[in-house]
Image 1 (cartoon, one colour):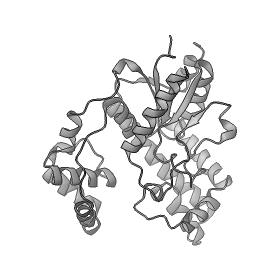
Image 2 (cartoon, rainbow, N blue to C red):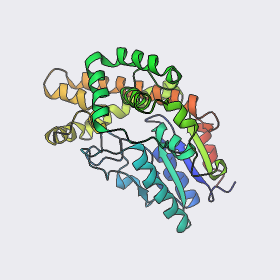
Image 3 (cartoon, one colour):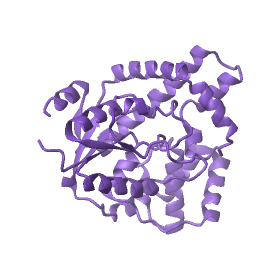
Image 4 (tube, rainbow, N blue to C red):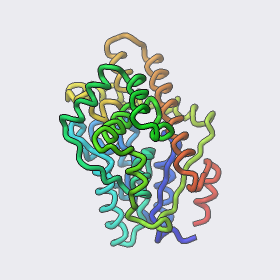
Length: 302
């Protein structure tokens, strides 16, 4: 199997070992790694977002990690533009691009194309956000379904950002977000990709998440969040919603002890991992599913 001519995509839930697998594969096929995780693009939180440390890169070039300012907006479109540039850069120097991460929307944009939705005025977007703030996510989602029933099985009812975005699009363009997606064409052919979806056994993944949550606290996550708080990053910015920030704030306010802190972060992370796995099952049916044993066997082929 010659993967060197492909664009390799590796998706999986948090703590599933994606980054380590990507490095091992890169060493086998002369690859370079491109980040596809929406939290790991930011520079302010390294420990809390589980961004790979340089000492663990094993001389494999890594792109799009820890370069973005948390106070600045960074959309899926922004990521796609940079990812395409890095893919082209890899190809030019005869390296295999390996995109790894847990942000399903990034992979969807790459493989299916980015929706060319007209720019919605900030004043209009603020009205939608104010409505959401006034009535809360639960009622807002029901209002969204009233104006856009097509969105029902496309968005998790707890997904605040996508709910607001879908409402904005339908209200402003009079077309459902799903309709915009259907009319979108990708920049690549399906045969350009080799897609791997890591399917980690739930029980084992929970244990890995628990261990990683503990290790994060031991590795400086509390100090990292202290520094982050001083930056006064607006609450609506993506990085402000990173798992662990609100929990560590509680700890700093002496509302919870260390054990409770670790447990709370673990619970939130397990919930997030479950949503990622659900996304994979729903949107990545054509991807090759691999469990940890399959990953090891796969690497032995090279």
